Image 1 (cartoon, helix red, strand yellow):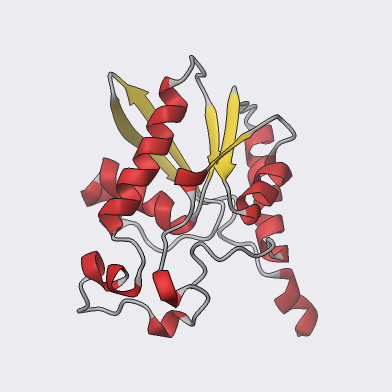
Image 2 (tube, helix red, strand yellow):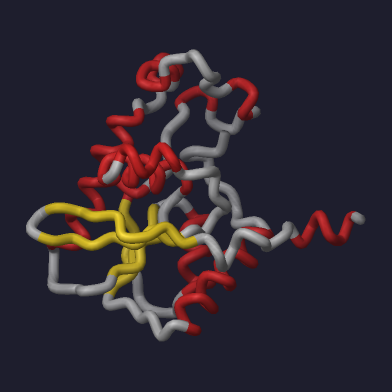
Length: 182
């Protein structure tokens, strides 16, 4: 489990970020503002997607797994375990704490100025947690996505609406390291 443990972006991560950049460019999508978490891998991802200036926000960091950080996912929460308390018992966060933290960060970004289109580069678990906060029924139906999935939201009258979840640009990208070893 990676969580708050930082590591460099993998070759697969770079390939997915470049595919995300191509997706935006092909559709003429531009951003007024960009932000990423304070973990280096999101900064690398953001730099692969755009060269625009950006800010970093501590509250966009990944789900914190406590003393299970850096350990095998085999030690993580299993079906039947209570996700609301499992990682807290290990010094980590509950899903609600992650949702609160990420919502606070995103709400701050959208309310601090009149930017119409904001690129936020975060992490898989906290992106899902935010989607779960905004539209729980829809979020629970989502399948497991690759990294660099695009969650498109609208913010109107203080409320977020999940418009789309886009993975077509990354779903078929294979890990370049796996190709070399074959």
